[in-house]
Length: 360
Image 1 (tube, one colour):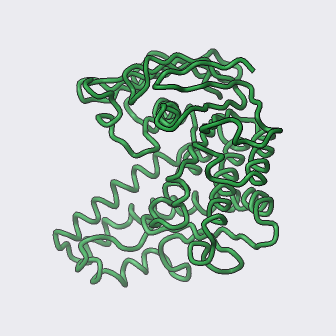
Image 2: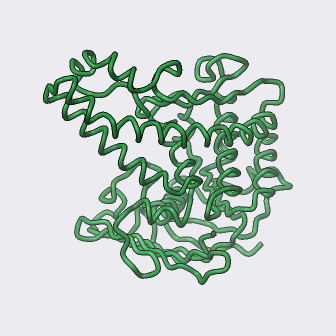
């Protein structure tokens, strides 16, 4: 899968943009505040239904407007091109695939897997476990195709159990209602555990490339004691859960642990090492998704030259050119890239919200 065409109307600081993209590598360059990141986010919103900046649709519409529109054409192997559309109008999001409205955002996002490596991504190691769970769940969602259904059912079951705890439901009644919660929690745990086993193989390869003199490890913690069943853990924590009025143990407490030479990476890694570990993690996930996912993905990298030194930029670029996927990279100036990597399948220049293709 690749995004062949992108059109934006009234999105952030961009003028009316219409651009043809290549299935391989492309650069987008321009001054600060010219619209590079907005263009990258437009691709992310169009393909996933969400902004990698965490912005609400109202924050994405241009000043003085009340709506915006993103259109695209997605190419897929052995099938006809697929029109996709994200529209914000009348305070509502409308998602369309092949000119048909889609109600579930997960169904919409399934067809065009997109990952963005941005300055926010470098908080993967330091932020709360929630950001690492979201990272992990993105990968499982695009590799295990019924995962979204199980995840939604689990969230409903968790909300129901928490409501019963808040209402002071007695132990016996709660135990009956907890059966579905336990079953779904164990299913989620199995999906995640299997996925991390696969991811670990890719991560080992990329982490060694970036930090060859260090031992990098990635571990999965399921959210409750490995030595006990979840049924037993919930029974033992009943009193505490009632006092807290929410369920403490379960997949909602799962964690992805990254270690550097046996120590938590967030505690011992330098800022530069954390960036390299983040890149290794995202590249590992992108490679695994390409290998096992139903649809090939898009990788977006915002301002690559400002995040890595020249040697590591060259290493990343060498890897990206070997990965058979669509890649879009932004930078302020192409001259900041190593000389041998200043070429791409397509190149665009952004200035004051206007986008022009550059003939190389």
